[in-house]
Length: 303
Image (tube, rainbow, N blue to C red):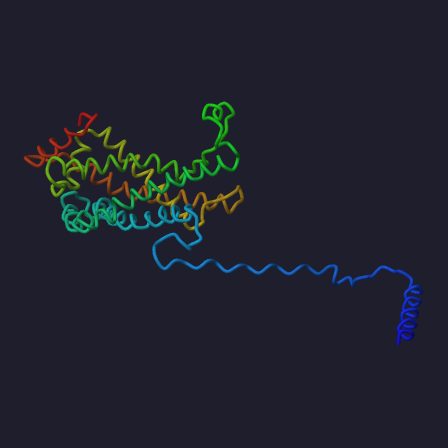
């Protein structure tokens, strides 16, 4: 038995010695074959509640959607407001004839809970989420480039740009916010403080302000309508991915289209609001005296 195994081992050893070493060649198709892609991991399960656990999204995801959908909610009110203050006066060509339509629809967006749901909360959410996004991106830039430990004075000396670039939408939003707040203060908050409500304030109140101090009124309303139209149209383009990028013909055509729509919206808004309401003139009698009293309470302005 041992002799047989010994003989077999010697034969195997001799056969191995007789083999010439040669490289092992692989077929060309195997060399060119790409590795299979790794399987895509399944997304984490969504939470069944409104909490953030298990959602797998960052704070930027939620802040962006808060800013986006709050603008959609405010658009509902804005559509009704433009209709009452611009389109209807443009059709009736008269401020007194347009007042009943404004008074008819006012309870739907100047009463609880519609006013906070359609106006106050969406505007506050839109502004605050936008500011939070800018702060978040600024902090991310500080962490990414290791500048969080550098003092502010050193950053200014080195001209480090840690804040995100200001787009046209953001810039117009910064300009529009104080204009809208001033408009709301004059037409909503001021009557509520001194008269207990704004039921007596309508298109005639705005016409009276234009006639009393045209420079301030025309400057404020032209700026607010022009900036608002551009902000709204560019915001819609941004949310839908239509903002032009680059200098191609398609990008230039899209840029002109967006600005054309902005100009058209502003022109339509001004046609009724400024072409009709602003030319309505002063109110007489006790109504005019009430308007005079309200305008006299505006701080920093002698209206």
